[in-house]
Length: 261
Image (cartoon, rainbow, N blue to C red; front, side):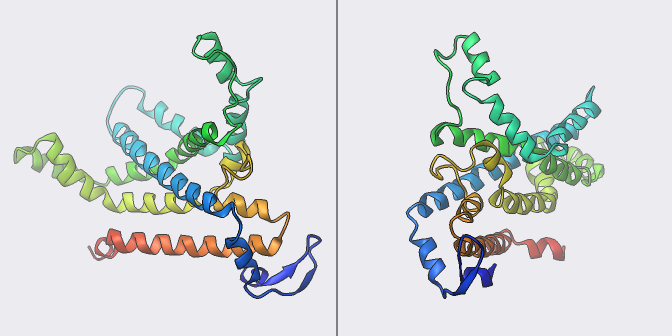
């Protein structure tokens, strides 16, 4: 990708020689790029934050004993077992303005006066894209946190009860600190996966209209039909961004302390 980004390649794939940093200059001069970068940042933060919060609640629920726990655990695997692209296309049809079941339901309930184009513009599409991305991210994250919760020794909770600790104190001072390694693993993997996510957005909106819902990964794919080398340049930028993001996060989170312990 680095080599390709430094070449001049026409639409038929013929290498016409070196381009230097010209493709990078062309990329950063694209008027759509600032909006794409802004949406990528918002998309990553929103999806990861919601996924972690909901998964933490689900993991704690599944860590308790209740009737039907096995069935609900199995049910959570469904979004994980299905193809992400297939799931995205399924949601796209559900939100379709003409044949979508969501519009039919809302019309029958009298909640809307006319069918809405839920993926027809960025304002309506973006919340749905975030919701679908969270939906497909929940299984892995929940099971990672659940595995972390199940490694906490029962004796620690028993000692806390003997010492008179309240439920809130036990959760804040015992559960969360001991869950930190699993939480960090889930968070880092989610950051990388969501930042690089392609099938959810491509399956629902294909980055449109006019790249308004495109993240850098989707925008990179859109560029390849016009300029392969410019697309490769954005791929290199994406790679560097992921590495920098993970290194900053690991530095801030103090992961070495967890390893040493």
